[in-house]
Image (cartoon, rainbow, N blue to C red; front, side, top):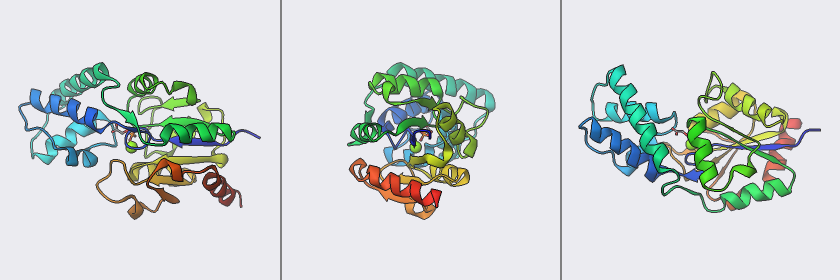
Length: 227
Ligand SMILES: O=C(O)COP(=O)(O)O
Ligand SMILES: [Mg+2]
């Protein structure tokens, strides 16, 4: 039987990237002559990658945005964000210990994120965490991305694991919808980037700290799938 797997979302789940995302977004808004976004706004802008974040920030200021300008600002975002990695980004408290505890219990781990794969790998590498993950899949790894369940299913396949023995950990409606569509139990963290509380999206479990993500909890969720 293949190893079970725990698949993590990245921004707002495994790593707190908010201040760096905000700095790069504000760099772009500055180029466009717009006002800076506030930290509290970020939670409604993040989730679908940098391009959508810029679009949402423009919409929040009722500003129109041509495709050409968006292309230019996205390139500026990628340069600024990529050049600053890891910046102030840090794994959430207990996240690394949780990954290690699951490895000891025989679980594989992977990352399924709507960040670009290259940025995700650079960030995880800069934080010294690459060796923990059997696969790191971003919005451009496949021809589809979250909330398309195939993004999660293909991440699990690339890690050499089986969707029947997988759980997802995420911070947003996108993660919860993705996992549900894939038939995979999902544990939501309540400290990430979402403008509505994760309980509204009915995840399998909610945690407020990674210490609550026990192997016993994951084993329980997998048993419920098997029955
Ligand atoms: O960067 C984003 O917008 C989303 O990233 P996530 O899927 O890791 O939360
Ligand atoms: Mg997230």
